[in-house]
Amino acid sequence: MAGLQRLKYHAMEDSEAPASAQPAAHFRGDGESPAAIPEHFPSDEAAARFFMARLLRRDERPTMRSAAAEEETVPGMVLSSERELPGTRTSLLHFDQTSGTIPVFGGEAVVELAPGRALVSADLRVGAAPDAGTSPTLDAAEAVAAVAHAAGLSVTAGDVPPPTLAWLHKDETDAWRLAWHVRDVPGLPPEARTETGHGLGDSFRTRHTLAEYLVDAHNGAILFYFSTAPTAAIPVKCAGVDEDDAAVEFYGARVDTDGGSAFELFDPLRRVRTFDLGLGEIESAQVPAAAVNHTKGVFGAEHRAAVTAHRNGALVQDFYKSVLQRNGIDDRGMELVSVINCTSPRDREPPEWANACWWKGRMWYGQVSRGGRLVSLAQHLVVIAHEITHGVIETSSNLVYREQSGALNESFADVMGVIIANWWRAPDRDDPSTWDWRIGTGLGRSGNPLRDFADPGSVGYPAHMDHYMVTFADLGGVHINSNIHNKAIHHLLTAVGPGGERVLSVEDVALLAYLTLLHLTRLATFAEARENMIDVARVYFSADPDRVSEVVAAVAAAYDAVGITGR
Ligand SMILES: [Zn+2]
Image (cartoon, rainbow, N blue to C red; front, side):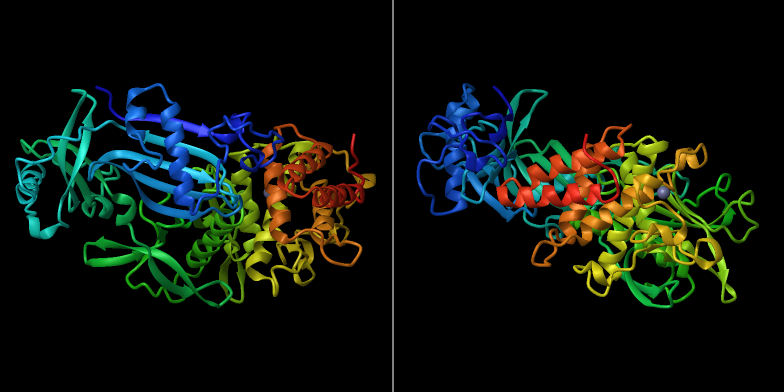
């Protein structure tokens, strides 16, 4: 007897799929492909059901064939959600599998459809659960009592939502078991309760875990359990004052303390956590175990630096997630950890340290004296976005930090820094003529910015390959020659067509730059960046050939203008 089995399909791997299912392919189906569309469907659900049935019937495995039944509609699959994806404009439909009326635990299907309802992809995990023996020996209350006994909890049936029946496949015994599915149980069994290891005892999260249990409906044995932790951490809306004296809102979490509860700078949704090094040395001081916290959710002006770093970090995370569809710095949900109040006596006499950097997978911030107090560098959103982008680069193309590849590393950090800062701060984020192009205002020599994206020459940097600096300093001029590539992207952001209209939206430039970055190899050159951006543009705009030539011309012109020419 087999348990759950998987079936995966993608139109891009199917040479017979119709072109409408393939973003950039030129195949025309002959009707044999699973993605071929035989008729007009009344709904996305009807189309998804048709394709699921076809895929299951084509499969040799008995489990798959039995899940398809004899019908075209796959009656065992129940639609649970449906959403349109940003970026690809495809629809994603989730189905849960049932046998008769009883859900099959873990049995589900995810079906993706193109705008014309052609099949793009399908991922099914289904099992051939029995359709007989659906009467439980224990009732729901007895199942909850079995959980309470096994977990050592005082929970009763009145404390949890009504349990439901489910089929569960036990791989150890290769048998289907009828189970009661008990949800929202306030605790895991003793063997699953682990200490967190930092000596503070049970963490808030461990103590407040909600768990789900599957209990054998005939003998009360605990068959399976798991934590529902992802929904247990609920963000709390907090407020405070930032380094610019602005009242800002941000998200934290409520934590238990000895004296009651507090609010800490941990945003569980955006995965941003902020610590205070207390002016300790960046290289040697121990980062505290707990994030910055305050007895009230209104932080006031006491934690300006922490509030600023926390909120600006969240803005960068939000941009990467919503505009570039990147899931955190490493695209795998990595937490953004910020550490404020850092010093480095070798660079500057404490308590000042005029720096902010991405180092050892964290953001570290120094501070400078101004107006009689220390002001954190976390106030420069453009600098933060620049530094966090170094983290993105480190976990993607990982451009070697020397000469041209190093200058590209610096430039892409500036590109994202300038775009992200203006996305949140410019008078009109969609109109670059309203943007502030300066990077690190006031942090350069004699009050100048560190760099100027639109006018590198104003702070003494080259803006054309004619002035490319060959040097051993600055690792081959990574902060110098980067300005040439910056200027190319500035040309692209502001490029206009014959009628004066901008060729590319800000989102398009951001996405082109980001996708180019992902495609680069570690030792990429300026010319390779140009070449990759043109390749990326060809795919990205492939739905419209006129648009492709227009955009490719704009990219080529932007690079030509700074002397980065094609090969
Ligand atoms: Zn940098």
